[in-house]
Image (cartoon, rainbow, N blue to C red; front, side, top):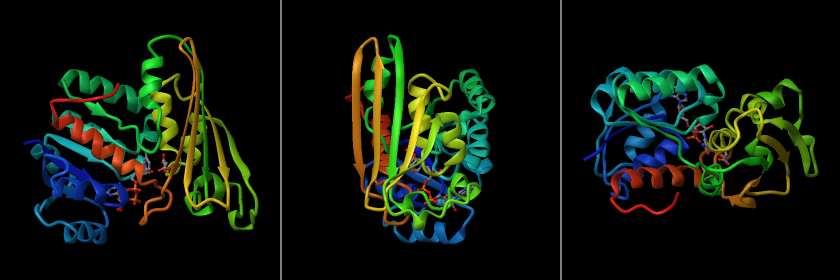
Length: 271
Ligand SMILES: NC(=O)C1=CN([C@@H]2O[C@H](COP(=O)(O)OP(=O)(O)OC[C@H]3O[C@@H](n4cnc5c(N)ncnc54)[C@H](O)[C@@H]3O)[C@@H](O)[C@H]2O)C=CC1
Ligand SMILES: O=C([O-])CC(=O)C(=O)O
């Protein structure tokens, strides 16, 4: 049975641990880690079948087959090289870290050398399957419009740096327009989806991102528009936010759970 370690026990990590624990994913929840003890206790107390060991990453990668990173972009720098050097596969959720081309190239090189896999789930967006299919021919443009309520954008470095008082905004307001490169650096915990889109499509510098604050919303909306030799498609998802982290949509952990299920099943559907 696949032995999994979960690094980061927040909104996403908690859902993943419970999905393994309740048998939705046929794997063993072998180890968990978080730098906050309360998060570890919160996850452990929600489990009924597994009693995972708490292990720092260096130890975890020696014991498990796959580490799921669901902590932060900063954590990717620690988790990905450690896993790959130990010949351990790794799934990355804080995908925005891969805007750093040195990190991305290093990860790809080690994975190739050690014959390991790096998995990036679709996360909180719909349409990655179509984009991957379309990318087998020329792509002309890829655009993401993310629209969130104030709680979904509060505390982002871009908001703080520009002294934006998001509580004083009363109508739908475009906060940011630019490349995915700038977007994932300015909103590291809000638009990792822009990174996933960039990796699947035309890269960080060419993928356009618009971030909109809308106080009337209760959901996190992501709209994607893709044009290429294949034609054109748009996708729009209206995501229910996670109850424990309003920045994160519930679809994000569901996407990780489904990607993990794919790894353990013999029959798989989709691109
Ligand atoms: N790819 C996608 O579509 C999405 C990606 N994300 C990203 O996934 C990651 C996890 O999201 P959530 O679970 O909602 O966040 P969260 O804030 O609810 O949980 C993250 C947990 O990781 C821990 N953590 C953070 N950095 C750490 C480190 N360096 N070492 C050890 N523990 C660390 C925190 O203590 C916290 O318990 C975030 O980076 C988030 O921005 C979130 C939503 C969608
Ligand atoms: O969960 C979402 O709606 C998207 C998100 O926070 C991210 O991509 O970082």
